[in-house]
Image (cartoon, rainbow, N blue to C red; front, side, top):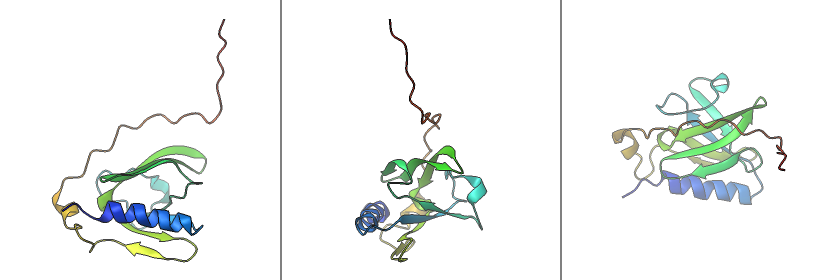
Length: 133
């Protein structure tokens, strides 16, 4: 049976957004393959805001959570393998779920971490025009 974590993350993310609250994930930044802004890591963990207004191109698939966002005004592509996600919760109410004991969680320890995608250069937020003759 497939691990339930990706399914629970997608459902809880939608639940928090539907409640007009801000979804955050707690991430173990020491897990292999994690690509997050290192300057915001504290005690080996980082909290990431994954609300639609804070991120672009959010993808929660079976292997990882990925998106692009700005940290201190600097654009960055973020990649978090499922094994590194510790919890998802609403910032305002604290409602959410911690992970580690859900069905299939033990499979994350047995499987090698997926290789993160090659970083793509950040796109300029300014439109570019080209003269065509």
